[in-house]
Each structure stands twice: as structure tokens, then as C-alpha cells.
Amino acid sequence: MLQTLDHVNIRTAGLAAMRRFYVEALGMKDGARPPFAFDGAWLYCGEQAAVHLVEVGKAPAGQGPRIEHFAFRAAGLADFLQRLRKFGCAYSIALVPVSNNRQVNVYDPDGNHIEVQFDGREEADLSPYTP
Image (cartoon, rainbow, N blue to C red; front, top):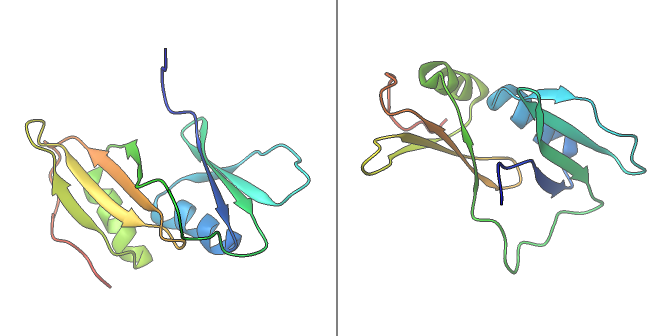
């Protein structure tokens, strides 16, 4: 039985920009990574290496099946939105029916859709942001 999401592995030709986005815009921590024979980065959500970046020689092909999005649960909606605005990262917010949780939707530099979900009781300016 599945228990939790361990990590997402993303191939990228733009390792520096991707690392910067996940650390500065999303607030993840750059952390320990085994000494693989290829370059990359492991980005942590708390104690978990949740996003593994793998550098490739050219941009991954945009054709064919791909992940529509991956999602994180989070707390601190107002601070998170302020972080995104400071980074200059566009976002939109959707309301989940019934639970009233708020989904903040962003895209990393390679165009991957990321959802960050917050408890609907958190207060914040919910205006969409486009730099």
C-alpha cells in the first residue's frame, strides 16, 4: 500500500535556474545528494528530499505524455504568496470544492505545473499575480 510521495525526479537542461526557483520561490532547501556520476540537486521539504533535479545536455522533449502537475501540502499561505511575489513568480489560486482548501498554482522554469495546497481557513490576499 502506498503511504506517501517520496520524491519527484525532474530532468532539466537549466539546473541553476531550476534550483534557484525551488529554493527562492518555493522555499525548499538545497541539501545532501549522493555522489552520482551526473550533475543535479536534491531539494528538501522539511527532512525529505522531495524534488530531485537531474541535469541533461538539452531540454527534455515536450512531446508525449508528461505529468500534469505534482503537489505539496503547506502552511503559511500569506508568507508563501509574498515569497512568490518577491521572486517575481506568477501564480493563480483555485478553491477546492467542499474542503475549501486553496491551491496555489505555479510553473517552474521548465514549465512544470506545481500545486501547493493550503488549508482554506488561512487568510491572505488571494489576488492572482502576474509580474
